[in-house]
Length: 465
Length: 43
Figure 1: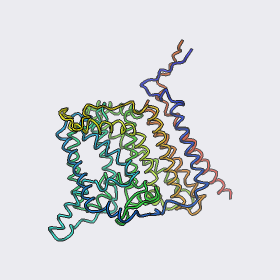
Figure 2: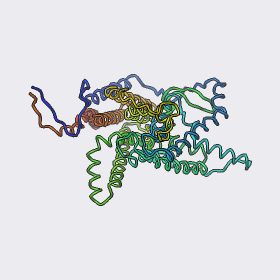
Figure 3: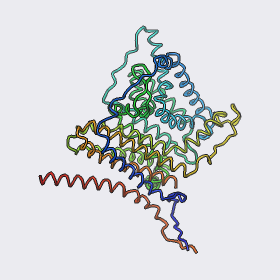
Figure 4: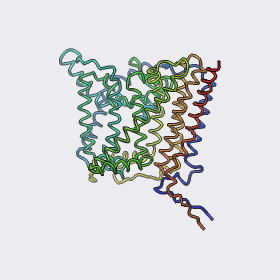
């Protein structure tokens, strides 16, 4: 005799895993707790506060940062942006057959964080808006004989424009473009129009505040990809390429106001995207019904509902972080709350990266097959061109098994949170001279990390069920 | 013979199983804080 458990709405863990999905959350929590005790016992002095910068050979540095190379990279970036806008406006209306959608939201949006961690801030030289801004600034200087004057950027704003912009980009993709059935549901027309408007806005801001200043604070993509590059070994300093201790650059990244909001927005938007079709499905359905019964149209109801849940995700992730910070402030010898709030924000960057890998790893692997086969051969999706002879290729969905995806997701989340915990412990040893107090302060960050891990695994287990 | 267990909506409650690790850590922190406060008061 066997028991059959008829679970409704497919809200079940995978049947073919050796243990239930929730036990992975317990296992991951044990890994974090063990890591916490190991750090408390053996890590008594800060190691990441100094970058230990090693510049690479002067000739290699000069060659890679030379003006011709910068012009070439900038031109490639402008060309790709221009082509994406063209494909979006003149290509097929089918999102999954149009080059622009996959290129912007998968290849660039998901691929560049990965490359930024591995090889440094690769987006910076290819940033099309920076290239255009610099070209215009250079032209102005040549004609007027002086450098363009700029307004003083309000330092209190910090990276808040980028944080809000980051939420707006994800909102455009997963709320406004939510149509189901395809990887990215936004209509190509909307993407083209949004890209044009964003280009105008960015160039105007660059004219007001200066190209580099805006890229450091307000340009969404520069700030977002730049944030992930802080985790890696490679970077530039004083006009020279070099390598540093991995993770060390991150310790100084969050000193600019609004940086915590950027990384929280990243975690929240990924969480919302993961929970939309899974953990939040019931709640979204409920609110959607209330709004549509109140007289809103179906599309508006859905968008308003999704916007509310996305905002709740942002508030929720922010609250969990702030609870951790508040807890730390109760430990004897704690610096002011404000310092703690900015001082530990960088510890969330590995978590944001882990969430990205965990939620989008399989999408990236599958969609990149499309990007480099039929979307490259027939970028407008007209079915009349076959530039590289791959227009009839398809996506091999058997490339990754469901279990392989799950193990990558679990691995990414565990590693990301252990790295976050390590960064937090390292910062604590810098703030509390007594390492025992430093370790005590990290009880709270341990709770934050365990909460994020369990929440992340729950979202994935429900989304993958 | 298969016996059908009438637990169709049990899946809605699976999230409860993700809570114990968080509760254990938060509970341990609360207990440690409480004991320390009491020790300080006794001193």
